[in-house]
Image 1 (cartoon, rainbow, N blue to C red):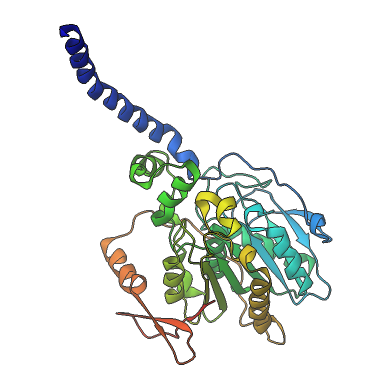
Image 2 (cartoon, rainbow, N blue to C red; image 1 turned 45 degrees about the vertical axis):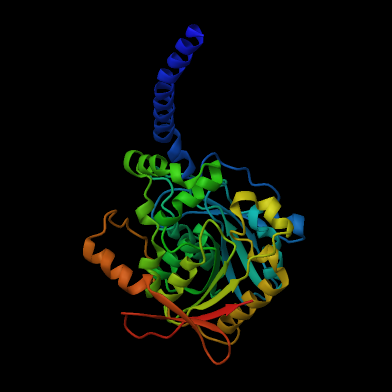
Length: 383
């Protein structure tokens, strides 16, 4: 018995050491490995092509206005096109094929509605060149969209431009539209207002770790490895887009980018249209196939016919029979400062964070700002 008690005491003295070693290992892992989940990571091969969904296409390449790099894309022409739409993928392991969101199926349906589509690989993704600064969550990537319009304008003079972006791609086209008025109409799907607040959700889905232990990962990514989470703030430039048309799409079952981000963007963009789709029932097969990513950017896969109907109607209101709203030369986006003053943060909270939803006499969900100047209200639709 004395021997057993002595052994138990030794084990009791060892567990703090083991716990400390485990915490130290976690900290080292966070510092070394954590940042890899905040960028594009290893390039995922571009699998498939528009030919798989019956589309004619051409593989093309061009350059953005801000860097001497080559971007690669698929050009999918349409018969007597109403306009050209730049289709922009999200972050993580995405590329122009947009396998997670059935991007090729969406491109096929848009071409059938007489919209030509250019689906590009953003810098640092797919088959496009990389940059030393890495991913900037939409800010620098917006120059890739501007480069796409430059390329198409040289080949097809007179062609008008719209864009559709998924997740980070939505932020990318918002930044692009704020800098280049040739982009006349925008559709975003599952897009964040600013990147920092959803970073933990993204890393948790990518790693399976609970959000509660991700503080060291995010701290090391931003402070030690220079991941510029502060540059992904589309909400800061969204107000410059009006009076051009914007449709914001989101799903209530999105665990990566909560639908509140959609409402914040709507409050920042005068006249924005909003379509927030309900989360599917628990038995829906997409829950099993999507896993921890939930319904992030799954609106097209959930309701393909309704999605195409609404997006086509939105673009038709701009491009069928209407002249361009305005023209301006493209501008490359310069990096913005990483730090924001206390005054700027207070002003951002006042303008964008406080949104009060209500219903009008048509039963449509709308929102209005509190403590902010009066603006045209965004149009909310739940279905």
